[in-house]
Length: 202
Ligand SMILES: Cc1cc2nc3c(=O)[nH]c(=O)nc-3n(C[C@H](O)[C@H](O)[C@H](O)COP(=O)(O)O)c2cc1C
Image (cartoon, rainbow, N blue to C red; front, side, top):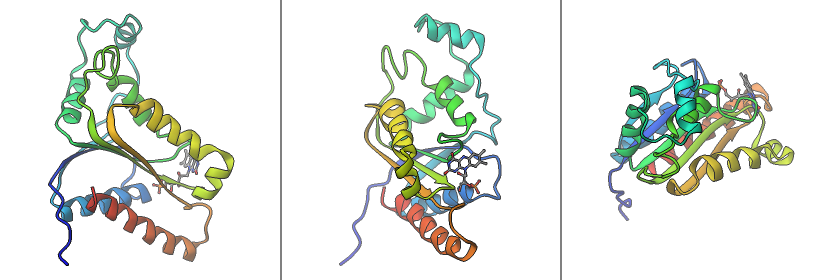
């Protein structure tokens, strides 16, 4: 039987890691190889490479606090809005740092999820899907036992995405600091295969 053909989509990736010598970067590469194999197109907001401003400025704070949708938005925020609007699927790729995404990505939400776009009123065109792929030192089993997995999943899917995407998924590729060298190499290769399949099956 011939493989099921998927219709090509445009994916926008929001990526945060300071180093290309990282497991998170390998996840990004495998995921994009999957996208390529499926015939999808993609763009990337590589937040460290862009030196993306992660802190809300005083003007931006004033705009949010007053729900002042008539006040102007920063050019880099408008650019992010446009990239999201042009994509069918939004994908967030990052390492888990202190049970959250890196500050650069948290700041991306602070600045890009603006009043009049993300809420009050919510004018963003909802994505077909929002997918979170994160790397973690603990195993998923450990993170579930501590409740950290559920906390991260809830914050990302329930709060930050909410109904801004028709479907939403949180995938954690864990265990880099909980398994020994040889075990980690096996697990890592399985994780990179999962990342590839996530891209190929969108
Ligand atoms: C600052 C910092 C904080 C971290 N916090 C957590 C954490 O809260 N939970 C966890 O499971 N792993 C944590 N880790 C481990 C990373 O998530 C883990 O190494 C992951 O596989 C990313 O690896 P990479 O940096 O090679 O991409 C942390 C790592 C760093 C550098």
